[in-house]
Image 1 (cartoon, one colour):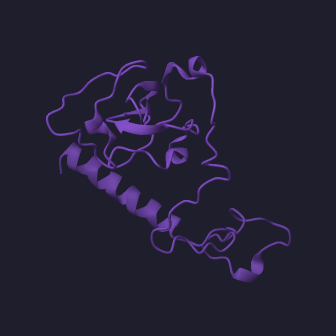
Image 2: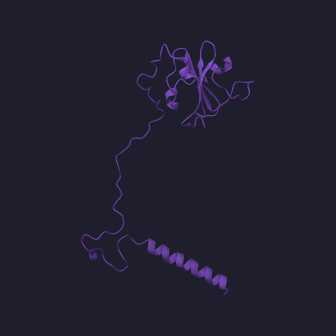
Image 3: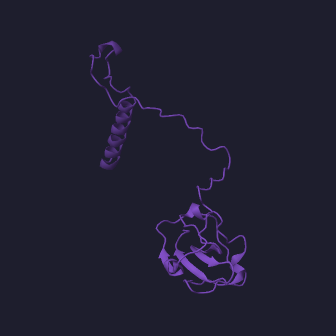
Length: 167
């Protein structure tokens, strides 16, 4: 037998012997009866806790709106909103398909978002789920690819952008 085959055979034999030793119950050496344990002697980790019972989800349930989610400010200081932010968190949601005929664009506050982006499939009515703040009256959050845009529903002017909300 070659040296390689011999070392391979020894390695397999050691693995099998090691696997047998691992199959023994914890806290008992081979040849010892169960009654031979010493009081207070601990063998292996303590038994696992099963924790509290959890019912788990029962089909799709929409997350409830937070208290005051639609108490939109009637008056607001426009310059305090005018920012382009990088989102602190991003969310994995379904695929994005921009309006037909439109190409990717890097929007910023002060620009006008075309009406094609205001369709219901782009509006973020559940904005709180994406850590977006309550929009002022007359504004809505709109998704464009990975970004969330706070847009005037009268003019389409972008008041604020959160880049990278959707990953």
